[in-house]
Image 1 (cartoon, rainbow, N blue to C red):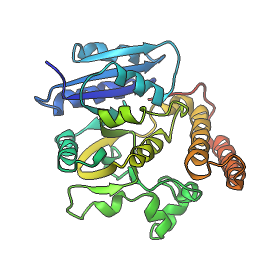
Image 2 (cartoon, rainbow, N blue to C red):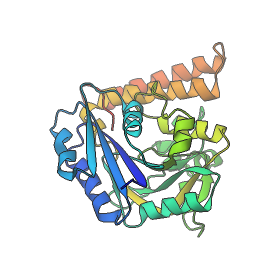
Image 3 (cartoon, helix red, strand yellow):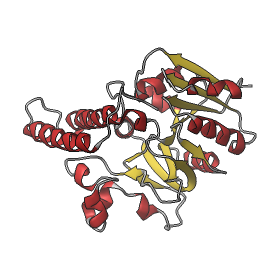
Length: 296
């Protein structure tokens, strides 16, 4: 039987979280015809074998090196076949009705190509997974910045994280610039049209880049608070904290120079490099020592 939904998870040392993620699919996808592909990026914690317990519904690709998140998703997409792709982190869990709500948005909104759910921390706090296009001020007013916490009412803060404004509106979905790659549903035809994730992004910001390119083809990105997923943020990256910090800032600079300051001699590039370099140095000083990079 052909699948209606292909779920792609990129795993790196996610441990028990991956088992919970796959279990949530079994529990909440019901009679939907689905398949899942776990792309393991050379995990060292034994989690590469977790998918075997869910065979044949779930199959795995085991890389001999960490190829990054975007490239891993593209690998999984190529060996799957369903018209809808659910891209999900291994430390993310579906709740009842989440996929049905996201599918409903795509059915009701023909111009929508990507939809993201309301994503919560395990304690129930909102993560702010729908956002405005990143710019020079995102580092100051982004989702995790302390300045945004002090001044959430500023327009720049509300533009960078827009999900809160959608919750309580009663609308089934709202249009946004981009949604988090921790959990998103995308039409395969559009994913293929844009060439999937840009594999220059090893980790972080590939979701913002994908959504921007999808919008460039005339499609919409939408956020639906009626779908809920629970995300334990950064479980994999905790095993390689320093490498993850460097990847975050390298990807932020790549995004900025690609979409905001594309000219080679654009002076904004030099300012962005300086500010991101300073921010990265501060973050590294605060971080515990760690090893190699991760994706998943």
